[in-house]
Image 1 (tube, chains in turn green, red):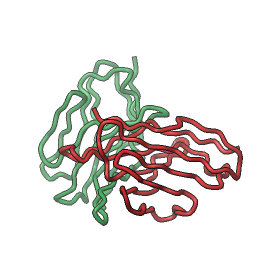
Image 2 (tube, one colour):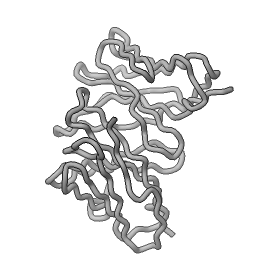
Image 3 (cartoon, helix red, strand yellow):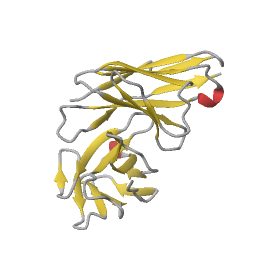
Image 4 (tube, chains in turn blue, green):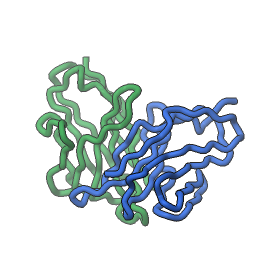
Length: 112
Length: 117
């Protein structure tokens, strides 16, 4: 199963773009990259996912390198409410059950 | 949007008692639900995968006789912590996969905080 590597923590100023990197150098061709975030004492919230192409939705943009060995989650205009732990996950397939396995994530702090 | 609820949101119980936690997908059907546990300042740890109408699949190191999982319908899965002890105190989170979702997104409940005295 492909594993991911993320910086343990990052800071960003409010109103600026927050760029969260993720390395997944052992990703397989049919594995997707998912991003979730967890605000303190809440369940994780789905943000975005992608396979090869860059993706954008109302929350964020996902940039995946051409070799798919790394990706970047971009929050274009960070607010204080974006302070959370962000998890980059590569979806694994095991016995037909596609489960999400969480790493340690990046603790993003948005500063006023 | 897809909503997953959990009940109760928190529970305090005495050591040796059993506690049941419910997980419901409110506006979608889910043949597969997942149960996670999270200790303070740690990441989520997958405990088991729950499939509707069949036995759950437990991750290595998770005692199936202690953490009983029942997935009786497409919208409900329950986790029962049997004979709970203080070391079982944790944040329990369920998630469900939307069958109709294009990317099979997995949505999470708000979590249940269990404190065993």
